[in-house]
Image 1 (spheres, rainbow, N blue to C red):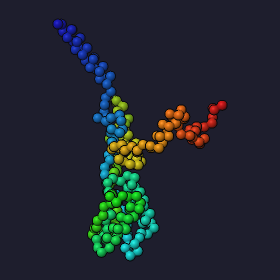
Image 2: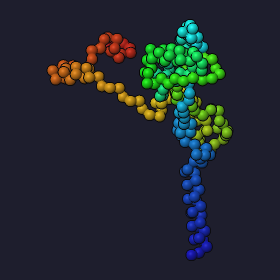
Image 3: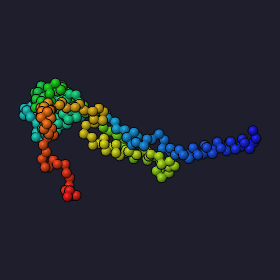
Image 4: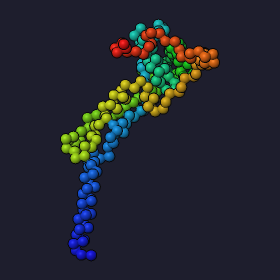
Length: 223
């Protein structure tokens, strides 16, 4: 093999390597994905939600503002709470009366007796009601480690997708939906019987719709 042949083969190999490097863009963004949800995943973690309310046993009730706070708190528990809800009254001679009042109040708001836990505490003179809820959290945005104008391969930036993930975490009604799907509601046996009966008789099975339920959004170009 002549020196010219060796040089020719060496030049060919170098040319192929250069061509391959030009065909593959430089990934100067590290291991970042083009999917913002991968770079900034939403974390769902449990936290203890609670309120503390002043309660007077002789008056046996709550002030209107405190009663409204309790009603809203229990509504949140019923919609996104997990497990039981606890009632902790100040330890002392009036603790039993306070626990009885709040347990009855929670039951009247729709909380089953089996999901109400009661107890006492020292120090604070207020009654504390609490439950475990899930909270969705995302990364803090504003990570700009590199100049976005200085990239050879147009790679994904570190902050890409962060704002979208942050907004989703803040807006989602029940973070548990990100962990597992909700259980399906039971079938409507009465409606099912009506549909099957109409089908067997050759009638329309769909429900009747009013003009406002037509689904049309505009009368333009209908003629």
